[in-house]
Image 1 (cartoon, helix red, strand yellow):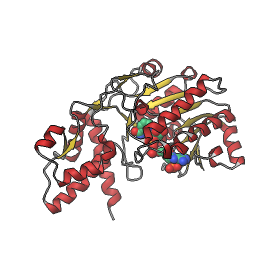
Image 2 (cartoon, rainbow, N blue to C red; image 1 turned 45 degrees about the vertical axis):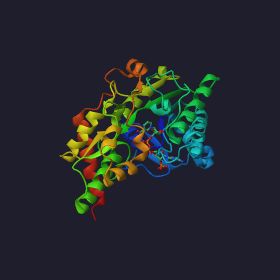
Image 3 (cartoon, rainbow, N blue to C red; image 1 turned 60 degrees about the horizontal axis):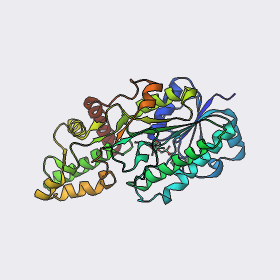
Image 4 (spheres, helix red, strand yellow; image 1 turned 90 degrees about the vertical axis):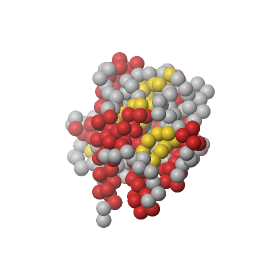
Length: 352
Ligand SMILES: NC(=O)c1ccc[n+]([C@@H]2O[C@H](COP(=O)([O-])OP(=O)(O)OC[C@H]3O[C@@H](n4cnc5c(N)ncnc54)[C@H](OP(=O)(O)O)[C@@H]3O)[C@@H](O)[C@H]2O)c1
């Protein structure tokens, strides 16, 4: 019976949320990733070791055939998501060839492919970026963005030629885990700053060199397209249930981005005192970074380029197909709660 939802990348931040949502709804799910997803065991979930960079995702012929026979739809989320390399080359086996292999799997299964791309296929585009936009001559901040752009571009070419399976593309903004735990807790995005600031405050407590609030180079008037993991999962499930979503691109962003000032407030609320604040280049030239601020900048380098964003993503398709209540804008209180949970999980992880 073709009733299984197949999810590549089910052990990751977004994959876990999607997997949990389908399991909650009573759907059988096949998780394909190299580590089993850190979720309580569930008879509806099966896991196979898979490497998407390999043909047939590295599955043996019998397992590949079994997965294809059972698959009702394929969600492709597996990706290399770090920002370590400036160029796409080293990411391509996973973020481009992995997409090719996921499409081959969906075709063999005869079910739709739901591909999770990223809003940052926009690269350094300024202004409005629409669902219909892709290659606008933008540059890329890192190899991750460029490789995700190339992966999505491959699928658009496949869609333009007659493809036997329906393909839907989703572009989430920056995903924040709503309930980070010691077991989950990916140190990514805003969490990377929380982690770095805790470490530096611990150092400052012994060295006594730090100011009360560390300054981070960033534009206080800029904003970030933050969304919560569970809201992204809910939107994916709602949209995938609609056959009319095939062939479309959905930008999974909130109606409004989160302003850097609100983010700073939530951050400091989680610490219970001023711990970090954005400052611009003028402020740093008037008062150069102290040793802790220089270290903070070094530890968070890959994210520096995201603290001056002005791009705006449209979400017309999301509003039309999933409703305007889908993916609400994270509030300060919700963000502070997630940040507090991350700090607590971090303490738990580092406890002996
Ligand atoms: N997090 C965000 O803010 C965000 C924003 C926009 C778009 N996205 C997209 O959403 C998707 C999921 O992101 P995420 O944040 O959940 O990423 P993540 O936490 O880094 O998880 C990545 C997932 O990909 C799997 N994976 C990596 N390399 C693999 C390989 N060679 N073969 C098989 N599986 C592999 C990992 O599983 P194993 O390590 O267990 O194999 C893991 O399940 C990605 O496509 C990403 O580009 C994420």
